[in-house]
Image (cartoon, rainbow, N blue to C red; front, side, top):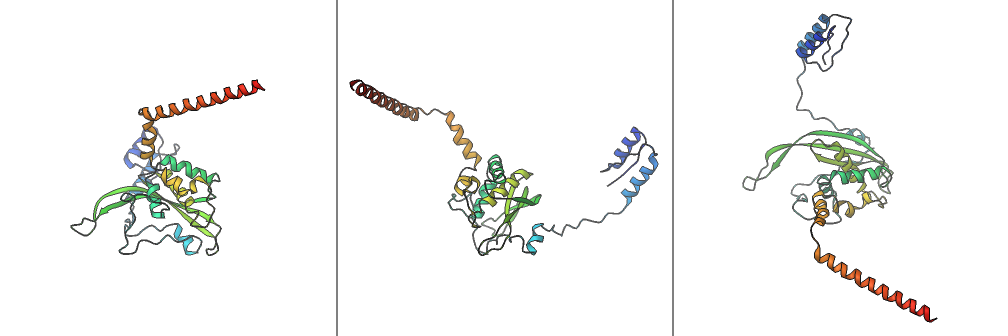
Length: 272
């Protein structure tokens, strides 16, 4: 952080252009010499090199060490094939990895509405944002002819680790539970909404009542795909001649039947 002092507008402009400070302190009652000396002194001071080998610890690790936060789910064992939603159809009930894949591909507006509903009481959740991260992750694949992974690109992702209160069950003590969200690019809102919905979908796993829309696995996973939803809604613009004609015939037949019944009732009443 650089600080400078200027007494006039031209001196201030010159100070900013020469030092490009992050923070500029202005005192129009003092001369610019002190400010320039301060800027030069700060710029000349040695800076410690960044340690790129150290990883930033996670906030949840602190609670986890004290037993207040459930541990993350175990990863796949060696030789075990991971489920891939892009290569196999969605089946219900779905595992949590498949649910997360579905939510990551889901429409942000849909997830936002469901996440908002859980905050308003339709989900029995009281969430806290444990951590939000943004960074780049490598993309790799394993060519069959080589047999080892090759990195082909880096993508930006936003990650959210949500913390929710859990009253405990017959075999699990009271503690905080997790909701997880991951979105492509800088998308904090979608990551937060996804984490809220992920936690809501874990209701049965945690022996909680599941009577809200965000806790209904089939409702959530079957309607989160915005491409499918957009196509199915907009296909109504296309002609539906056969469907409409069949329903038109049905409505006319029903109306005719009702009119006959009403006429018969009127004749019976007149005869009495």
